[in-house]
Image 1: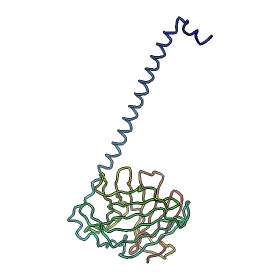
Image 2: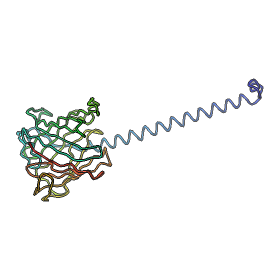
Image 3: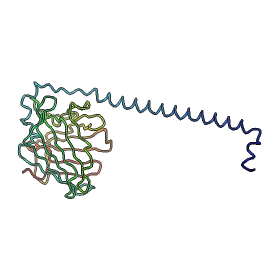
Image 4: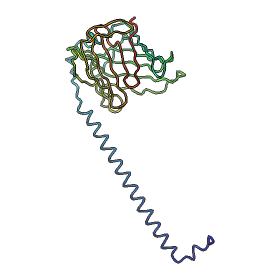
Length: 262
């Protein structure tokens, strides 16, 4: 049959009409599927967001009268001291330095201390951040956010993923260390919907742990996780007077230790 012969087909117009009807029905079906999917995503988003909206931390100004004086023994952040951590990871040798700076930042009317955080892998800086903490009058140490710079292997700034500040974009502060942690206590360390949702639970108290730096008594052990990374599961050990001394990544079975306080 030649190309011109289709115009002599007595059923040609009927076939064309049927094809148009089928195409119309398919387009309607596709639009319906897309609309349903959008509704499902919207409902899921709203449900997740409500989960965060139920979190309402109490951060009254009157409860932070000496917010820059850190006395919590399990997270001391000594002024002028540098805390150095190291451990072998799947990406290479990780080296972390944390040091409190001689500056402060006002967040939600509360004066926070500033801690500089640097992470290296095989000697290459991959992340630098300014973390903001404040202690309430009961001795709980609060986390009010961080400003993050992420770098590639050539030292080029990639992005600021992970940055958040309490009071902006509905972000809320969390507790990084309780004043009197007890087994079974659970708490949020931070909350910025779909960006920063770390949580923790106290697994053990009064334990003795030995690391390359020495033997520590009366330590606590926590489980740390985030619903943003379901596969990530960590345990952390905190010692009085030192803070974090050991971090265990349960997922890949790697450990990072506090190796020096300078």
